[in-house]
Length: 156
Image 1 (tube, rainbow, N blue to C red):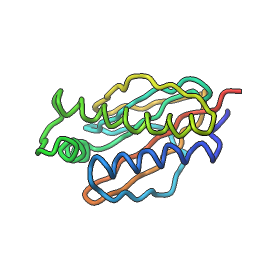
Image 2 (image 1 turned 180 degrees about the vertical axis):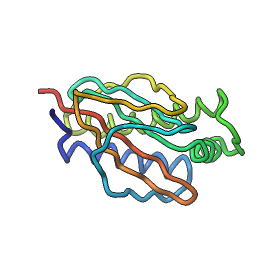
Image 3 (image 1 turned 45 degrees about the vertical axis):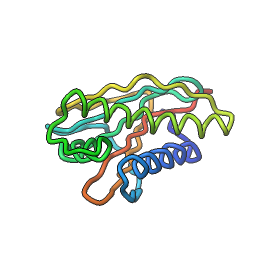
Image 4 (image 1 turned 90 degrees about the horizontal axis):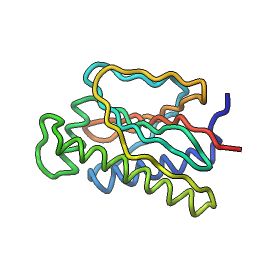
C-alpha cells in the first residue's frame, strides 16, 4: 500500500496553517502526525475534498461541532451557534482555500493536482481505504483544534 512521501506533506501543512491563521486570526501549532484510520464521532464535522492528477486520494479536515462553530464564527466575523447553510458554506470555503493554496505550492514544484468541490459531513462516520494509508496531523490553536487527514498517494 503506497503512502505519501514526506516532501509532499509540507505543502498541505503550510497551506492549512496559513489559511487558518489568515481567516480565523489564530496562531496555529502543528502537532505530531500519526497514521490512523479516518473516523469522526457523533456531532463531528468533516470537510472532504478529493484530489486528482499527479496525486490521488482525499484530504479531510475534521473538527468537533464546537470547533466548527468557532471557526465559522471567526471566518464570518459574527457568532455562529450552529452549522446552518451559511456556516456550512464558510467551512466548505475554508477547505477550498486550503486546497487551492496547496495546489499552488505543488504547481510551483512542477506537480499538478486538481481538487474536487468540498463535501461537508456531519455525525459519526469512518472511512476505510485499501488505496492508501491516512496520515492525521492535529492542528491546535487558541480555543480549538482541527485534524488534517491526508489519504493520498503519488501516481506513478
